[in-house]
Amino acid sequence: MSENQVESETIQAPLPPAQLSDLWKLEDWWAVWLGGILLILGCVLAWQARPADFADRVAVVKDSSVDADQREGDRKKLTDELSKPLKRWGAKLKSWSSNPAESLTGIDAKTNAAYDVWPSIGMVFLTLLVVFGFAAWVMGERYMFFAPAFGVL
Image (cartoon, rainbow, N blue to C red; front, side, top):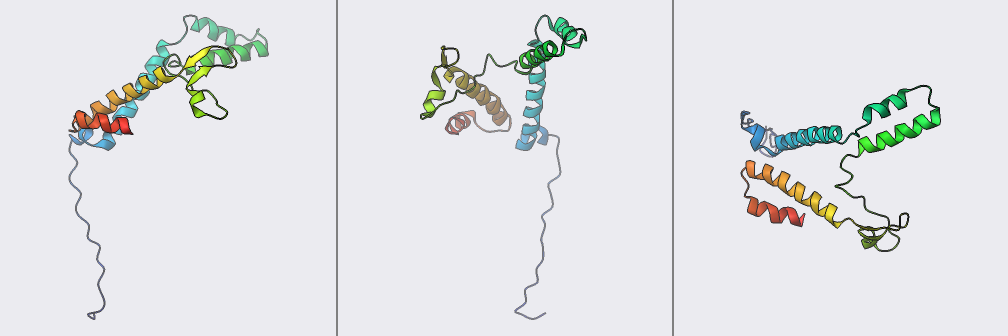
């Protein structure tokens, strides 16, 4: 081999051995844990939010003597109620025409009722701050540094 040619070698560092403590010290695993916890929590809340007459409604939907339009209406209403158990704690932003701030507060054109989504946005922010702050604290980060940085994001 001549002096002008450089031999290309790939140097690979050995991977550190996996440890059991990686399950609560690594950010990737925290994403898995938090996702699983949120999934389980969502299932529990959906189960708890089912209407008291759930069995009767299911029987009505399954009953073949009810006409198709009635059955479809009941199915849609039941699906809407069961699929949105956290609706009272969250709010959907409204539409706007020229100013995005109109989506946060104002008068709903359909119901002519005042709405304000800031409390819902605040609750989502605080919930995420607590959940992610706890995860950061367990991984060894100082919460006093995490909270302001999370607020900026």
